[in-house]
Image (cartoon, rainbow over the protein chains, first blue to last red):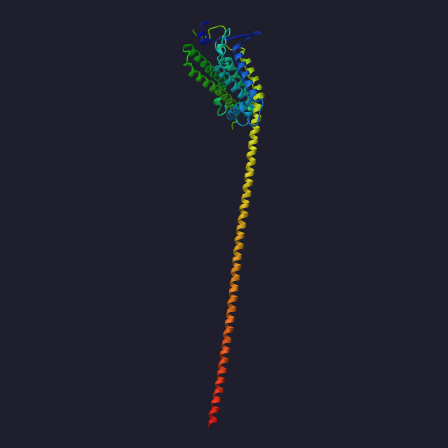
Amino acid sequence: MFFNSLLTNFAALEVGQHLYWQIGNIRIHGQVFLTSWILLGALLVFISLGTKKMENDPKGLQNLLEFLWDYIRDLARTQIGEKVYRDWMPFIGTLFLFVFVSNWGGALIPWRLIKLPSGELGAPTADINTTIALALLVSLSYFYAGLSNKGWRYFEYYVHPTPIMLPFKILEDFTKPLSLSFRLFGNILADELVVGVLVFLVPLILPIPVMFLGLFTSAIQALIFATLAAYYIGEAVEEHH
Amino acid sequence: MLAFDFFGTTEGGLFDINATLPLMAIQVVALTYILNALFFKPVGNVVEKREKFVSNNIIEAKNKLSEVEKLEADLLSQLQSARSEAQRIVSDAENESDKLYKEALELANNEANASKEKARLEIESQTSAAREQLAKQAGDLSELIVNRLILEK
């Protein structure tokens, strides 16, 4: 796959190609870490600037960050409940910010202008490793939340209305991370592919509405991921009577 | 033109799961702690401090409002009692003046009646005195006439 003309350089799609980094005898996808470091670095700079001088009358960036904080708190509070949402708010917020920044960063920044020896830069969430990592963290979190809040009574949840539910609830523990990871992965990858194919076929104007749709999808996916994570944690800590 | 080798290659592919996964998980956990320290805690402190400040102010304002309402009610009741007191005083004074007027009227009436009676008695006594005098003069005159008649004879 070598495209020499300028046009195809912009439009080339390299699906399933990765920039491998060899560390000892493990191999990792370098492009995922590269983009995630750039985006998270930007996020951290943004947040440090906004929280540098905190005032009682918020101005500028602080205002925006407080709005974001409030938004995440509402999300965590409605899904997890008044009692323990404080413990989980940073995690939910981090998931939201990470997914949101990754999705939007992947969609907004013209990564394809940077040529890599293999693979290409893009949204970190378009890599299955990232989404599975996030989904497994969510799984671990809701188990931990349930066990730490209710002890062994957490497992009552599996037989909650009737013991007939037991196999379904066990199955759910597998389908939750699976659906979480594949939903995010699929949406973001599909968006990148659609935009890529359209840019490749019709380089002018036509991809723009699809790009906007992609931005919309990206934001929605971040919200869905964070909401579902919070919902699972809320489900685990909920008291049945 | 497009390279859609999903599972075909020995290396790579869309579902190539490797050490990226645990490393990304560690990175996200680290990010959680960093964001908690940089973002969630400080912003939360500021926002919650402000929320507390606002709710305290609201409570204080409510207290003040209820105090004002209490004072207002107090004032209103004082005003009411003052008004009824004034009314009472006015009606008392009216009664008093009425009584005084009646008393004065009665006194004046009595006095007038008494002086009328006195005048009547005086008139009566003068009338009778005048009558007596007239009668005496008539007697004298008749005696005189009689004496003259006797002398002429």
